[in-house]
Image (cartoon, rainbow, N blue to C red):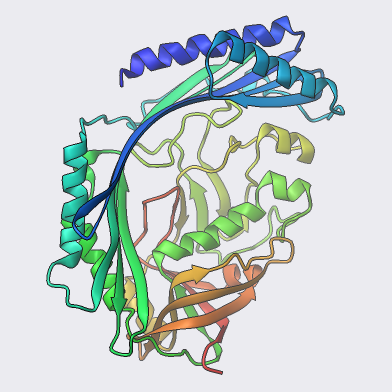
Amino acid sequence: MDISEKRAELEGFTARILAEAAKCGATAAEVSASHDIGLSVSVRNRDVETVEFNQDRGFGITVYFGQRKGTASTSDSSEDAIVSTVRAACDIARYTEADEFAGIAEPGLLAHNFPDLDLYHPSTVDTDTARSLALECEAGALAGAGDNLRSDGASFSSHTALRMYANSNGFLGSHTGTRYGLSCVMIGQDAGGAMQRDYWYAVTRRLDELEAARTVGERATQRVLRRLSPRKAPTGTFPVAYSPDVSSGLVSSLLGALSGGALYRKASFLLDSLGKQVMPERFSVVEFPHRRGALGSAAFDGDGVATRENRFVDAGMVASYALSVYSGRRLKMPTTGNAGGVHNVEILGPVTPVNELLRAMNRGLLVTECMGQGVNMVTGDYSRGASGFWVENGEIAYPVDEVTVASNMQDMLLGISAIGDDPDRRGNIHTPTMLIGSMTVAGAG
């Protein structure tokens, strides 16, 4: 993929779209364009199962007639398709009611500097290489496995994405990123015939930084083996720790409650929470959008507004909401550069080694998997199915499943007593093990 050529093509298409919108009488317009190319190979039981190539292009077009808005999209870049899609958006706008808050970002808010975020690291990966990596991953999982284990598949993927945003206020910005991934799923069966399923995966911007294929498979096997022969957890009120791959869900719920869309719809348990304490004062929640090489980095948001470091929670107090231009107007606040979401969010505070965190926990539940949604974003009520491990005397004692954990998100956030030294950086929210002092656990009855 010649990225310079693809970028030039997208620039040409976005210019044509904006010109067509102006020709149709739109007072403002914006375009989100993308070009993606990828390869994915999956294997199962040492045989190739699927080989998938994808190359996709898409355009999201929004036009404004004053404060009436219309949106349409297409994956066809032909002249006729562009013209018909723009006209469809215009037709929609003409029949919608005016929204006093609608419109593109003011010129003074738009990003002007585009730092090199080190997101693009192309590597030549052909089908044979991808197949070899997927097979090696599965081989690591099956090495030394007995009759009680079987593979549910392993895969390798390579993906390159070009994203572009332009609007009629003169903004044009793009960013290109690569992503490489390995994953493996294993199924185990205990002596009684009960089966458990677990997995592991790795994802990076650079192929040479990807976790070794064999190691990914080995970790998938280790994870499923430790889940075999689960027992029932006690029922009562206990400390609950969330492992890194599930604790991100707690921070995601916090950010959802602080998002402008939830706030102006009054569908948040953190309405009017600016300046109020929501976590212990030793913890903060901060985003770092310009972190080099990170999976969530971006120089501008979905409105073309420059991203910046935001402290959503500072020393336990709500310091900022997460706002787009539109939601900021609705709330009479300035945008925070979060149209489309947040970027590389971390929870900061004193760190406790995980083994010490479990010792401090003494007796309780370590959650490693959650099932269902179970969070009422209006009230904050929280109730989810879970599985994981019972902790006795500060050490993991045995696996448990079919557990329900319940509380209220506000109590849970204020009840965070410690965070571990094991942050998971494989996504956009980087969280470690998090210990909550007290939750209701429903297990054996």
